[in-house]
Length: 323
Image 1 (tube, rainbow, N blue to C red):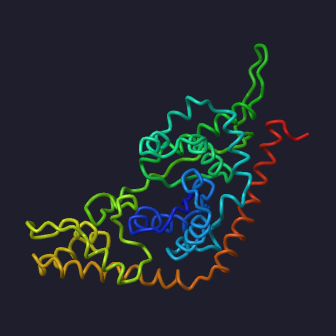
Image 2: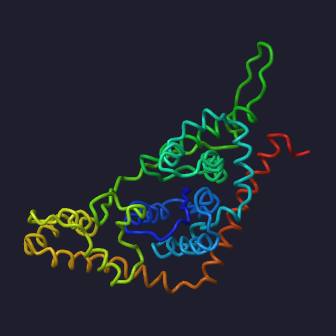
Image 3: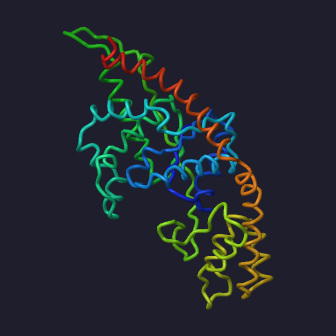
């Protein structure tokens, strides 16, 4: 399994239920690579100090959420230069019209982000990220399926260009796919969690409607108490939708029936349930020193690069730059 997370700032409970929690489960079933996508972040983040801090935070978040750095490889994209080298080779195989079809690029430009060349070529760096490690599955949301499709296309183009024998005349030559350098990965579509924010919209930092994942209890309480409630209803819908992440419907039915119309009590019950989940993770996160995180990232980078380097040796030979 391969996945990556951009170091773009503090995570919220939507990130946990939508990504981190499923990743932890999958990491126990598969050999796992968890990449801190710092070069991807450069397409939008231009603050070096913020990026440095975010890189350490992302690694802490993975571990606090339950990823075991001994069995999974947690590494920084920039520590494995083979990623950018392979991305260049892929860029030389695909066309501009092909990249122009990328939904993510069009969406980000439509939202006002600078249409820099890095953002445009982003899918080929992502393809390199995935394909370097003979990845079988890539967990993504349904809206990110195209990223994995682009990776498969890059693998096909490379294999067909550099790994298939040349057919001359009328001779029929058997093509042995065992000689292909890149495996074609498949996407594992993650269930849509649809975590609502404090205003009822999708929880997102851009909407300023989040409940921070590793916040203090006071910060959690402040966020929960700010949840917009419908004074006409007997059960506050936005509170209930968030609460449903933490309890079963039967449990919530009893709580919401007992406290019918008492929004303060219902919010306080939600605060306690969020705190019960977050508190152990927060304590674990706070116990990890910067030096420990740096050692984990360094070790992960060395393990990842050993694999990526071996793959790139085969790639360089195939494209003809090895003499």
